[in-house]
Image (cartoon, rainbow, N blue to C red):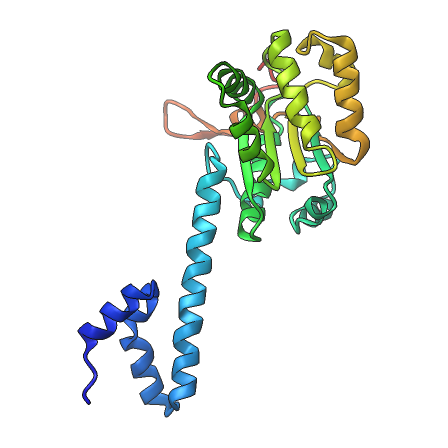
Length: 267
C-alpha cells in the first residue's frame, strides 16, 4: 500500500496534530541519516511537542495583556543602586510564585519599575506561569464595572486562576471608597494563595494618599508585605538620563559633548 501525503495530512488534522502534516522534512532527514522507523516517529513527535509548547507560550504572553514587550535582557541593571541584578534573575525563576510571595517595586518615576515587572512577567510566561498585567486604576475600574453588571464573581474567579497579578502604577490616582474596598478584597483573596507584583512611586507611609480608608490601607500593606520582596528602585530617572546624554549637533555639523546639569525628573 502506497502512502498518500494528502491522506496523512487529513489524519493529522483529524487527530489535531498539525505539525505531523509537515512530516516531509523529518522524513528526508531520517532517510539521509539512516534512521529507523522508531527514530523517525520519535523525531516527529518531538517536533509536535516543541510546536505545541511554543504556541502555548505565545498564548500565555498574549493572555497576560502586557502593554509593550520588554525583556530583562535589555534592562540596565547598572543604573539600580539598591537592587542586585542576581536577585532579580533569582525572582525570574518563579520560585517566589511557588511560595506565594509578592514583589513590591518602589521608586520615583522613570527608574524602570514597569520595564522590570514586564520583563519578569514575560520570562515567567515562558516558564508556564499564568500572568496578568493591569494598572491599578484599570483594575479598580474593571472590578467596579463588574460589580455593577453582576459579573464580579466571574471576574474574581478569572483572576484567581492567575499565578502572578502584576499591578502597575499604584500611585497616580485616588480611588473612591468602593473602588478601594474592591481592590483590597481582590488583593486579600490572593494573600498566601497567589502572587502579586506591584509598582508604586510612593513609600508605604504615603499610601493613604490614594486609599481613603486609613485602617483599610494599613491592613492592605500588612498583608502585601507579610511575604514580600521589596525592591528599592529610587534613583535617577532612566528617561531623564537618556535625554541628557543625547549629543547635540551644532550648526556646522560638529558633535557637541556638552551635557545639561542633571535635575530630578518632574514626572
